[in-house]
Length: 211
Image (tube, rainbow, N blue to C red; front, side, top):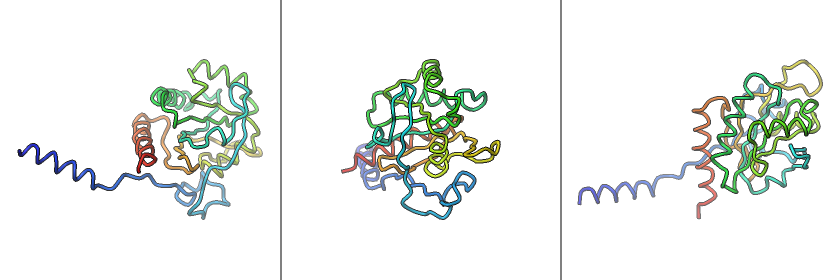
């Protein structure tokens, strides 16, 4: 009886506990170095802007392809010798975890689109084990990618070589919900952070299953 009572109490407590919720990140909540100056004071209604870029198969990819999906985004380049290989390896691990989940996709933006042509992205995708149905590696107009990085994903710094739309990408993975809102930032080179991302992903999915 004592064991049964304990189980009942636990289940009642669990049922009455508030559902965990992730924050909705606004530009004012993020490191100013990663945010376009026009958005520093924005405290609500921030969403990812519409986009149209080209993936590793030469296909046009837009916000429509991610409509109604949760997705994880990052910024990289195929010739990066430092953090990118680690980030890609960890994104592959995430891909393996979400392979059968039709609600979740991945999106990686090249910060050197002048180098990362479609053939270059395809070569990289094949080498790293990218699955086309789950993960788009995208290239395109550098200005558009820069503005997405600075004004939408809040994910890159500008202190590069000083050229127009110059950017230095961070190691951040960005969790985006079905409403195009940022719900988390994670160090894509850190396995503990990846584990936290997966936990938060489960929390986010659960919010869409609430009655």
